[in-house]
Amino acid sequence: MFVRSASERDLAAIRALLVETWHATYDDIYGERRVTEITDEWHSIPLLKANLAQPRSEFLVADDGKTLGGVAYATASEDGKTVTLKRLYVRPAFQRSGIGTALLSEIEESFPGAERLRLEVVVDNHRAVAFYKASGFAVLDGEAGKAVHASGLAIYNCEKRIG
Image 1 (spheres, one colour):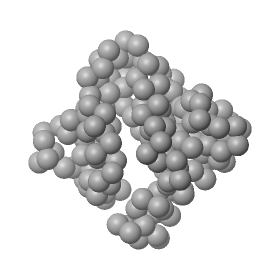
Image 2 (image 1 turned 30 degrees about the horizontal axis):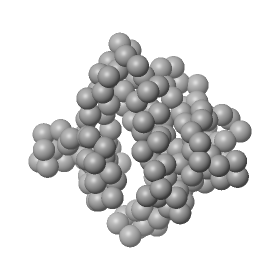
Image 3 (image 1 turned 30 degrees about the vertical axis):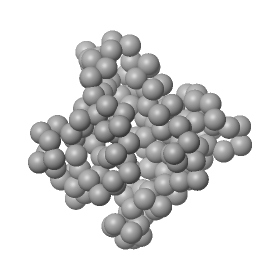
Image 4 (image 1 turned 60 degrees about the horizontal axis):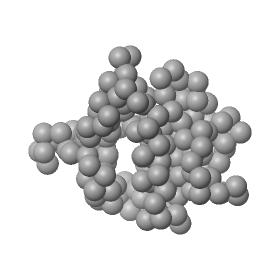
């Protein structure tokens, strides 16, 4: 897999990867119906297309020429000091192969003036929480720092110093 910038021609494959990954990760936690509602809202083609055009952002895919193995999307604050990772997903068949680490590293390198990288991670997604902690992120306000996302999902707000 190599990491490259996403393009409009990737959008259907990105959506398929996101839907597959969300169902594999969250169906047992939230139920298939709720996961479908979330993916339809958060990972629609029009929204993904708008992400491609977002200023101060980076939209990446991990690609082997046949299949997309992962996707990452992040935006920077106006001053460029804070980057927010909005998406980092690896297709289930490719998890634990270094793709998530490669995408995260490329996101960090894409914002050279940034001082911190922030993200939200669903509390019940234990593998993702462990991945981010192993990648140097800390849960803001410790384990008591649980918040509730607008979707109703319990999340941790995490941050990592970069740059």
